[in-house]
Each structure stands twice: as C-alpha cells, then as structure tokens.
Length: 192
Ligand SMILES: [Fe+2]
Image (cartoon, rainbow, N blue to C red; front, side):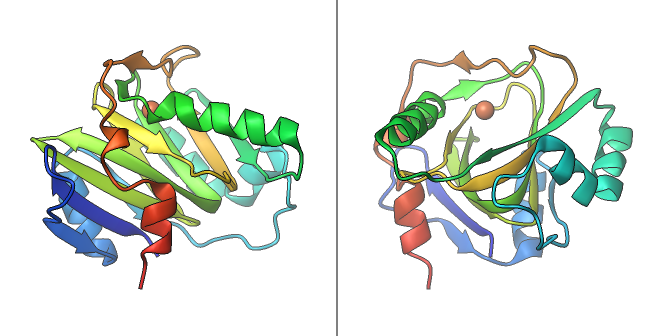
C-alpha cells in the first residue's frame, strides 16, 4: 500500500500527515500538481523483464498516459538484486545520485510495476514522502524540487515517460535534506 508522510521541511520529528488512503494521497498530491494513480498489477512479469515485456503488459495504460501527456518516449528499467559486490556497488551508486535534491526540466512520470521507491517532494515549506509500490503511477512536474530513494537493496521495475531525450537530466540544488528525513528503509520498515 502506498504511504504518504508529510513533515515541515525543517522538522523531520513532526509528522503533519501520515496516510495510506489512496484518495487522500491523490488529493494532497494534486495540490502540488502531481498526478497519482493506481493501475491493476500484472503479476506474471519475468524477474528481470525487458523494456518491451513491461510495456506490453501495461500497454493500454501506458498508451493513455502517452496520449494525455504528449510523451514521445517510454521505456522500462529494473533493479533486481544480485548477490555480488559488483551489484551492490552499482546499486549504492544509483541510490546516492538521486538522494541529492534536484529538479528536472521535464516531468518525471513513473509507474512501479514491481517493488517500491520513495519520492520526496519538497514544496510549500514541506516535505511530502510518497512510498510508491507496485501499481502506483506518480508524476513529478517539471521544476519541482525532489529527491528519490530506492533503498539499500533496490528491487523494482519502473516505466519511465519522456518528452525529450535529455529532459530528465538532474539539476542539483546542492542541498541534501535526505540526510535528516527518514529514508526508504525506515519508511518501509515502519509500516503497521
Ligand atoms: Fe528526479
């Protein structure tokens, strides 16, 4: 189940909102211009699916987003744990990069077909952490300050949508609020 947690941006000890209710989450995020949807999860994807396999599984849903939002490119990627030092290094590097607060010139639209990740949206003097799980689509509007945590053992399949080939480069703010707010592992472990 998706989990939304909101704090003042200078006070990670004070939880303003904590909810798993899909409609409440969608309403809160709408105020930030963020679209949040849940799609039925396709259960029989391979453990390490190709981009084509993932896109085919969600074809009608992907086509609707592409049509509505005018996307030109769509792909899918996966992080699938391997018990090797090489994988752990790769996973740690991938995680660290997007823990740094950043914006993009393009919208960042993500659908989680498997696993989970947390988007932290920094807006209106608050931090909104959305722990996304399989079936969740979240759109981070262009120029919205945010960071992303895939956890210490990244394990997910995600569909990405692009308006152009380099719109999804990060513009880093130089700040790192991720260091003081609960991380992916903490939020995942803390569910009731
Ligand atoms: Fe991002």
